[in-house]
Image 1 (tube, rainbow, N blue to C red):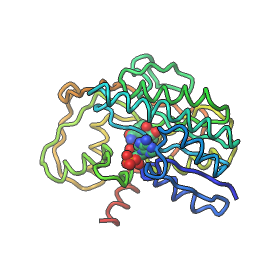
Image 2 (image 1 turned 45 degrees about the vertical axis):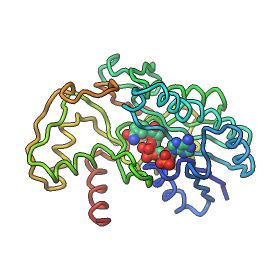
Image 3 (image 1 turned 180 degrees about the horizontal axis):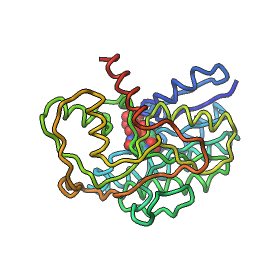
Length: 291
Ligand SMILES: NC(=O)c1ccc[n+]([C@@H]2O[C@H](COP(=O)([O-])OP(=O)(O)OC[C@H]3O[C@@H](n4cnc5c(N)ncnc54)[C@H](OP(=O)(O)O)[C@@H]3O)[C@@H](O)[C@H]2O)c1
């Protein structure tokens, strides 16, 4: 029986990781929310993990408020602790227990301008916002503290929102609500990326661990790149919402944080996931069953 600790277990991804690993009787899943373990408390991280001596640790905890991170020094410092320094504490604790460490990162570590096809696992990071800087620091701290790591980069995550009050909603959730309340919506058509369905990512994470893939950096998203306008056209078609969708440029929605306009993650190491359209279909089906 392998002991697996999942931290940030109430999150969008955390919940799906629990489901996937609990189905396998070879794993004893120890799921910790922020209340069980605040990953920014180094001594507690080392002590609590040391007491369990896990075989693997998965870090699904994060600070994801991309715009808030630009708002004040205080928020940036908090994001740096959660996204940047804490992965180093977890990696260190993993090394002490001889456990493998899985950490998640983002397309926002790239600038979105230095390539035509997309960014592969070896492309040079150059974050253009503070959130991206904190996530890049998390990668650096992970590598500094252990060799037995999987850093998995993903983008535009969607799935069941985190269990916390005021949890961050995915783009699809936000657009679905807007589509139910409005006859016309405006959506940007100049931001191109890839969607990642949380249950698919959780499953692929398990495959990486079970297959003992070489340690290192992986890119996991659902197949197919699109812009946000195209994504909403597909969303409303599948959800049968009759809404007029107007494509606009992203400067119509000024935000505090700059976003890369082109952040396609290229996966050169793993079998590709199903298309985002198929994943979206499953997501909407499950949403209908829940409501
Ligand atoms: N969402 C996206 O579009 C996206 C895109 C690219 C990459 N990612 C990455 O994917 C991973 C999973 O993201 P997600 O969307 O599933 O996140 P999420 O839904 O926001 O969940 C994050 C979880 O982390 C917990 N957490 C925050 N601070 C913590 C701390 N100090 N100690 C312990 N737990 C803490 C939160 O607990 P509370 O709720 O109690 O605060 C929450 O349950 C993250 O690494 C994220 O950066 C996400």
